Image (tube, rainbow, N blue to C red; front, side):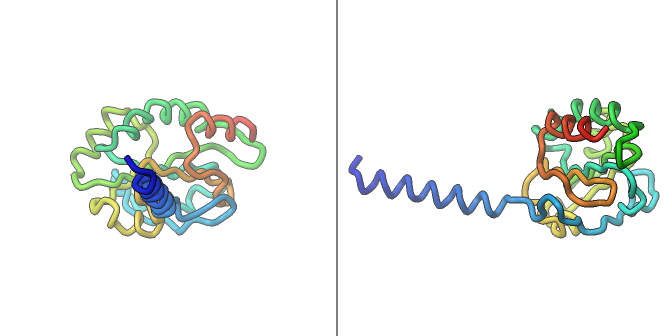
Length: 172
């Protein structure tokens, strides 16, 4: 392979990686407010994210068809069990709001049962990444996670479960 072809391939890959990074990058950063989330929950009740004011909240975009999401769910359940009723320095408790990016509601419900996702805040968006909430948040890949403080400000974007655990533990 000649040097010019090699350099062109490397440059092409670098440009692709850079474009992909900015395209997939979450829309919001630490310290920002998220858009208001209003939706119907799995049990038919109306939900507004403001109801969770005063708690730490993890907004978790996921899908029943997403292997990495499903693999992470058992650890997310443990995190929820550990901190749900916890009294923090500035907050009372921890909640998870799951927003599923789907095309099939029955697969979503089955995944919630199979993975034992025990929190009550489950929202489904049936147009996958074209759905209103996904578009408003600029979600282009899952899992995508936002950890909110008690005032609804983002304190972490796309942290691993281990990092979320440390962030919450440091606030007790």
